[in-house]
Length: 379
Length: 166
Image (cartoon, rainbow over all chains, first blue to last red; front, side):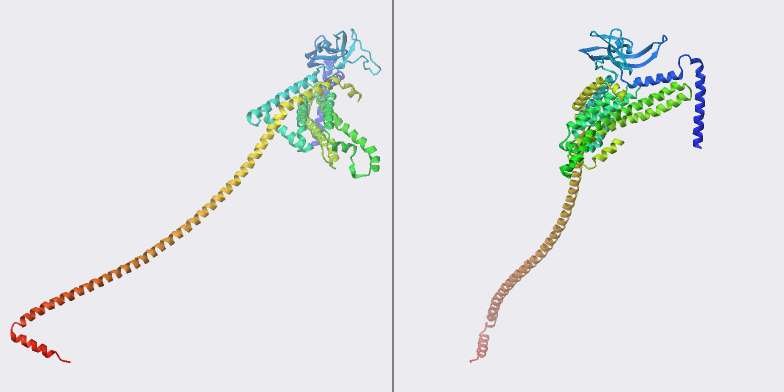
């Protein structure tokens, strides 16, 4: 019964969709074919996923057919034979050439290239520009959001710290919401994975990374449309920090685990044969662990954004009374899930970082470490 | 993969490292350390308070047990004291009784003695008085009977006849 109802419903929906689609075809066929819309949405999503030199709130085409961007420009900082700083408004979203310190720059696919005064770009056979790319240290949209998030975090938690000092260690207001999370990270992430003895050293990092990633994930869900944690450079930076912290705080046991995992269990002659395979795997593991971190966060957040925006885009493809609410409902459901994913990914990142710190600060060999790690890696 | 590498922005990477490290250091100093210390202190405080309460409870129990014991002791002591008092009272009564008896006997004996003495003195007195009275009577009788010569001679005869020579 249920199946037939669902199939009937879907059939009806498809019918309505096709009807309205053909109905729309008539008057608006001139400029906005469904293929154009699809391509536009695809480009819009791709554009959204990337970092930007301007903070665009929205863009539209005016009556003359020109694209108008509403938002504010951000500073562009280049290192190209000296420091070049200018406002991104001078690049006009890649439509004009900015002159700074005798050099000319233009924007192409969100990257800044040095050009001549006319803004000519030369391309190779793969359609990549061959112009010089100056070192771009601009305060982009993502950098701005990181700054905002950092300030927000600092404001929230320093005021929480102050309220502790004032109220005799009893949290007040928003601290009542954040304190259990801090306690959870301490008890169930740090102490559980690193151990009672050494967890204190890693607590600031774990807390900072958890709230930083969580807040940025949540900001990604706002209509501001910032995709900071879905940017490979951001997640790489975080993973590099985890890698550095893991290996710089590694104990003798940790290094022994990598370079001499069998210990005294076997005579040296036997060990050599095994170690030819084992030690490279262990060394590779050192890099794979943070690499998995960076890919996981990047892929989850990017995928979430793609799904959400595609579903929202469907509204503009269907343009009907049925398709619209349907994709609206779906995108609403997905955004609710995304709120959960935002928290979950922050949790997993922190959890795995704590696990790696746990390996790094281990004092004795634990036979089951690898199994636990494998389980968590697949989760 | 190529797209990923192409997407990688060195500037963003640079800023992320710098900003995150800065945030980490700032938060560690101004937020995490005070927060964690405060939480730790609070937890220690709670643990100590609980331990103290437990201790107090135990002490309370001890105190109750002690007071119970004291009460018991006091009760038994009272019991003992009462018993002693009763004994003392009885003893005192018995003592008093026996003393009174002794005293009484002594007094009775004294009384008897003095009565005896008085009696003896009275008897002696009576004897003396009887003697003097009888002498007086005898005198008077003699004076009366011996008024004439015949009677005197008769008496002398009588007396002389009474005297029997042995």
